[in-house]
Length: 153
Length: 335
Image (cartoon, rainbow over all chains, first blue to last red; front, side, top):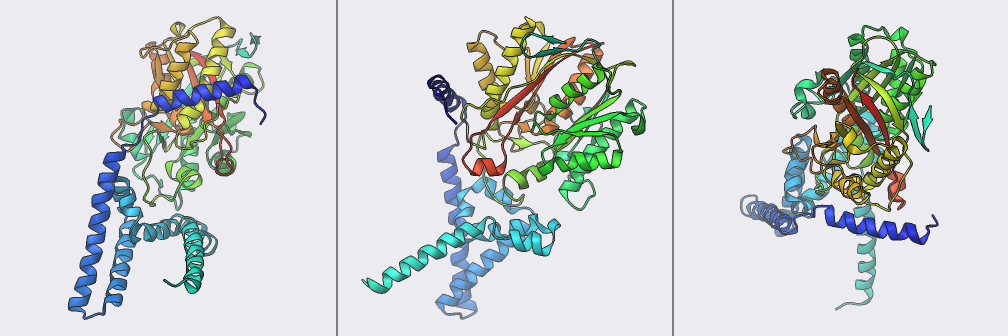
């Protein structure tokens, strides 16, 4: 859209007004909440891994996998019964960054699109949120893998 | 009849014979809870999907409205309405069931004012009588379409608004005893001052609201103080603040006593709604539950009802287009 100078000045002026009158997110409080909830989730994961090593006599790598699986299951369960989004609303990045965020990003569209059927609903829309993370996560790991092959340090 | 550049004056001043509002449980817990005709216990309204619930809510609002006016659906000559779903399905499916000649409207959250204006034109011109005007929205269907799955854990920004689960309807006619009468109206221009933040709809719509109000005041030679209330649809906390600021700069200040935003009437602020309520159902439900009763009782004699809409789609927003706003105003008076 071609805009005259006058219109552009109006847009700039309005943007300033909007910036002034729009309340800001509480960054400090948000960080604090994300830190303690995210930390608590990681601590829980650590406990699960250590418990699996001690009582199930799993080797370290298997115990770590057991921790991931358990956290994914718990998140899926909490998402299914409609509790997880409330925790996430409080915790923000605290629940998004650990593996719980990934589990929630898979389960919530699966539930959301079920009325459109298993194939064109849940099946087709399952990756609407997690998809980009997978695409770019896998793509970047391939690039890093190739680099690592040639440049070993 | 036209007055000024863009204002319509209704010669016969069509009457609003009856109105109805149906809302979800969260809206029912708010300050207007007791004034809605029906508050659902279950946001799914006993249906299999939220889309079907939205359709049923729209249809139920129409049916209650007709029942209150004691008019059967067969007698109604036109249904004007819309909602926020893709291809306004809730309105179309309701029209299928009601079997009333139907003009589907899309004006985003401005739909209730748009339908009232067009309905008044049809009634005033003698083209249709009575005319049913309705609008509705549903939190769950709007979230899925514009944002994220319901159970997805994300945080809302302080400027974000909460789509109302609700529908409202009004029946217009030239004859009978009305709750209020439609006097004049001004159709809004689409105004865009470059806001692209989809979480700040109030800021996207406020310039359109100011534009419509200023044109209406200029055309009619009136000012905000000539009305008991100037009521906006769903500007929310941020948008109303911006509107007041812009009107003050233009020399037509809206004081707190004379100005009201429907988006700030529905929830009481405890329920994670941040900047307030939004959606077609917001202004439609408040019109029926608060504005028309006040006009009928004579507490308010003359008000401006202005619903505001953000005319974006998920595609336009993702392609980086800014958010165009629109606002339509209709002047309502007591009998």
